Length: 260
Image (cartoon, rainbow, N blue to C red; front, side):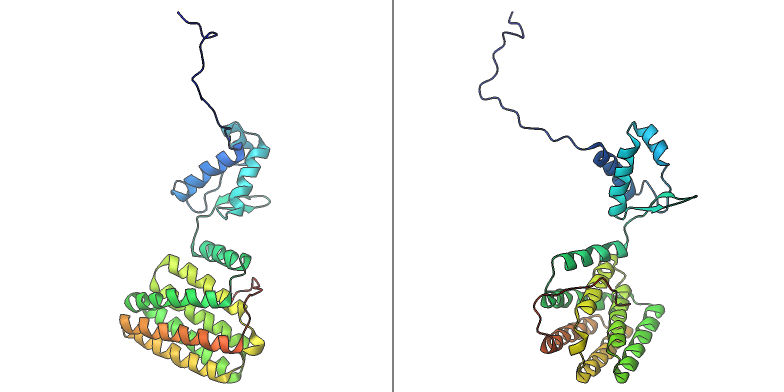
């Protein structure tokens, strides 16, 4: 019988270094999965740090670090003071919009790349809006269009651009697709933020934009899916060309201002 001490190791047997996750990451991962799977509903208050530490066997510092991770990910909202604590926040369209805007700003995405993405996505939004729009959507489209026309006639470029963002956001909302709504919200705000207002004083651009909006809205109102898609495609392509005529920058310094 061969003892353990005299056993010969297998030839070539090798081990690689193991990476042991931090306790805070493990706790954050568990809570993240509960939130995303629906196990913890929106607004649910987590136990106080002291109770979480007792229940998990972790230190309060570790619990605090885990909660901070989820707060940064916007999966928790921390309210200070009496009645405060950590409350569950499930991702929504604003979460998506914020993330997309961070990527756009962090990577300093080119303005023409923003327009290319918009040209690829927004016609689909218009087509879905034509199928799914309701009376409230149509009323909001009309209100945004009226604001755009009035500001354009007055030569109020900042107000015109804000109304433009609002109109495009309404079209996205009418699509009923949460991913498209969040994505288009971020994209429209970023294009608004990137637009060089000092050079966007061309009255023709504002008039053509208003006319294009009216045609797209008519197709959406009439539930003309193909027409809405085609007209939106023409509009966003023409807008990109017009913007390029008056703004020749290649890279952008975006602010975190919103267009609404």
